[in-house]
Amino acid sequence: MNQLAIAAKRVLAIDVFRGITILTMVFVNELAGVSNVPGWMKHLPADVDGMTFVDLVFPAFLFIVGMSIPFASAARLNKGATLPGIFNHVLIRSLSLMIIGVFMVNSEAGFNQSAMALPMPAWTLLMYAAVLLIWCQYPRHAGRFTSTAAKLMGVALLIMLWALYRSSGGGGMSPQWWGILGLIGWAYLLASAVYLLALNATSAAFHVAILAGATIAFIGLFFLLGTINSDSAVLGFVIENNRNHTHAAIVLAGALLSTLFYNAQLSALKLRSAVTFSIVSGLLALASWQVSPISKIWATPSWALFSIFFCSVIFAATYWMVDVRGRTRWCQLFAPAAANPLLVYILPYILIAAASLAGVHYRPAFFDSGLAGISWSLAFAFVMMGITALLTRAGIKLKL
Image (cartoon, rainbow, N blue to C red; front, side, top):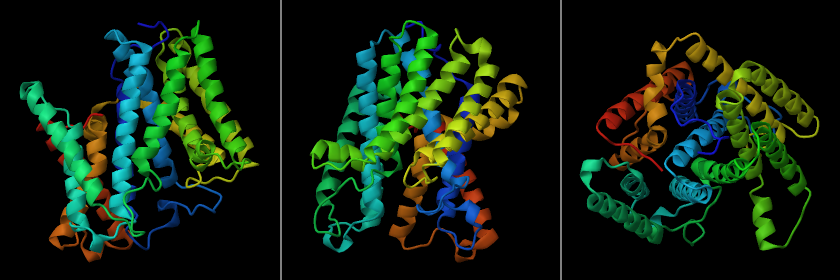
């Protein structure tokens, strides 16, 4: 195993942070359809210079993806994998996230249902059935033949749904904006490539320096590409998807904080490292704010750096509560989301599509507004967690 890699293990503080983030994500997604709620409980418009806690949920998930990269890499290195082999695995996972993200985006907007052979809710349910078939973690007793046949059936189903899709413009499916999962896929791919290259560093300090430098470089690249106009198809694609670079910076920052906390050569200084990390990210956020407005939609550098700052503070508090003080009984509340995050995320979309196909409104009208809607959204998030816990116990777990 590479001496710079973190020991392969589960870290409760990271699992709790992940669970809290996923629970909050389901809550705010449901709350988005509720009217008459305070502005700080909604995403701010793209052209408003600021952010709410809702605008922190997506970058928090990116940050946690980054915190998990060192542990996932270590686990594969322990099994004898090479760095190119690990990158191939990362590439497959990233493409999987992009595929699911694109299908989800096209199920939500831009379709012409009248030109399709299936009503959109049915198309959506079949799409999620394909996702479950392809990316479900099958038990060993199912056998390789059964799991392979199920995955191939899922692939065939996705291809059929792609062929049946008709957009409002008369064409077929398109990436549109990649979707949340697709954006995570791009950021994970870019950040993982840097992290794996950094494992070739000659010392832990050099390894950390590469991660920190690459994080700043991704932020700088966002600024640079914002000044360029190009007719090149490749460069034009990179410019059009410039927010991938600030997203990747957030993921790398998470990997950096994990390294500072859990690398054996550095972990003795974790308290000092956490304080330094938070102060530096906060100062950089304030500095970038002078030249870049805060905007989650535009994925501006100031938004990314403030997100990194807040995430580092939240994780440090979680670590202190769980690992230092040993207060762990409450952590079980977030275990389902930590163990099966992708299923928790897509489960509400499956429920909504099923309700639409049945011709019913899954949220009673009384809960469409105000405090009642907020209460519903919170209860809805916990119900999704409970259902996920039951499905996980039944052996249904999504793993990319």
